[in-house]
Length: 253
Image 1 (cartoon, one colour):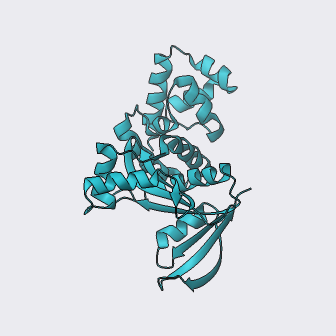
Image 2 (image 1 turned 30 degrees about the vertical axis):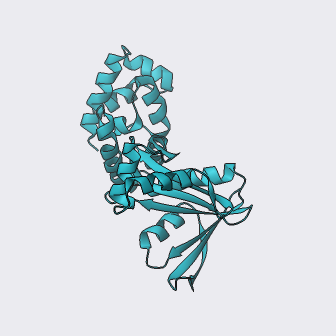
């Protein structure tokens, strides 16, 4: 992050809002000298002040940390860069940016339109005819698989489908979550964001436990499950297909 650039951006946006340094300082209960330091690039706002400052100036946290206005096409790229840049230096700022980023990532059911069908045909089932994909989407949206609750979601970021997420009911209190990110969208934070949103959905639906089988060689998925708070006994089991798997569990309070 370039502090000089951020400072110049803060000064410009403050003037756009016709606010003085004193007004900013009084609103945030800080000194004018502190605001001046930000605008000259001599320091950055504390994490606790970032969101209130952004609300005053009508900007996002991502724009604050980027030092510029961002359209939808550049928001994702800059957010990913900023998360990587600040992650090791400032956990609080990283959490704030990820939280904002999460709000732009949504889970929704697939629609049998050209955009969703095109994404599925490109990344998920390239050899499947369009009619078959339309039927598959219809089956997904029935919310049933062999008499149990099943729901398939599109993971959508900036109106682009970047992967799939499924919920499958094992019993009235136990559910599993399956995530698949499409090629080119891995290691960008979408898995963490989508998993956290899915956990909220599971909790809202009344499930008490999330149970997962993860391939022992799927390092990325293992890291993801640890990151969002799953527990494991660290033993390796064989699943029905003969693959080595690790069992993960998470209770939903």
